[in-house]
Length: 149
Image (cartoon, rainbow, N blue to C red; front, side, top):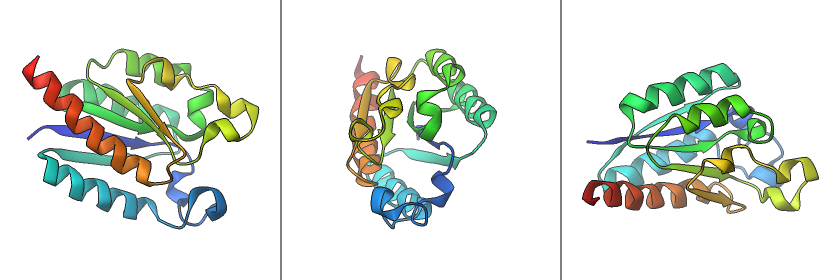
């Protein structure tokens, strides 16, 4: 069974507690449960992880090179700052989907730029935590297309 890494950046461990008016009341554990259930239905497994440390996210992306069919990533604030995460993603050969819970384009101007988007095969923003489910479903399609290519 193929595995998709779902990686989460800084402060997402506070999901459901931090600024619920922006990010909602669901926790990261709720998001993981929803993605895990859908992935099982779609025929793949997930590895779900969160870190506030940039180097840990980079290490997981490096690990994904050998262990994952695709990466779904919500890099949090690293979206706007991390060339290092972009470089790691550029070394990954599978599909990459970028997820943001809020619509970053309706927020502060510094959030309008994403280094990760330069590598992402798709970006989902502004759909709340449902964006993770949408990304999981899309990843299944991308993996299936890769199998037949």
